[in-house]
Length: 215
Image 1 (cartoon, rainbow, N blue to C red):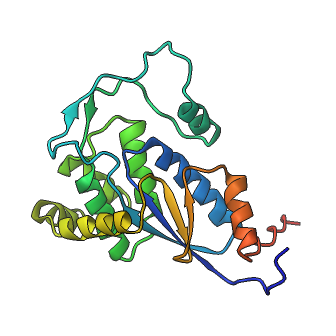
Image 2: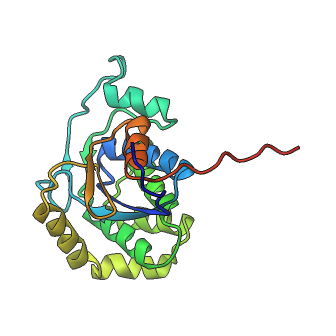
């Protein structure tokens, strides 16, 4: 039992890649956690597959239309998200990670952008390495389109993303999603919500009081 006074606010760094299916699942679990606990979320990039060339590469769809749902598809459906089958191209996600880092530093609520990038890749089968696609998604989620285009075309955040990926590797991160709580507690993988809640309680954080129904 934790006898210490409740802690006020947690900081959670989510290391992830927008082409990682389990990261999409992990994002949804993190959003549920934010509804119940006082949390500041920060994003940190990680390349799921650094062997993908900048121009991307063809891929054979993993599942046929009639195949039974995979574990990640089943989990996604329970969380209200969808994975469309039939992908024949694997994009390099570095530019998308650069767009996400720019958004984090632009002072907007960047959670909708992250969700939109995942949806574009997994549900709409869009190419998230395409500047036009990223500019459109960014503009739809609070970013200035012209400035974002300049950021991506000049690769203003390329080195910063590489440095952040290097930092993740230096602290031993080998799989995503990984959640780092208060800069010292790590949770690896797209854990079920109940696991994340238990960790928060063990660390001394209290759940928000329930919102009273309107009279």
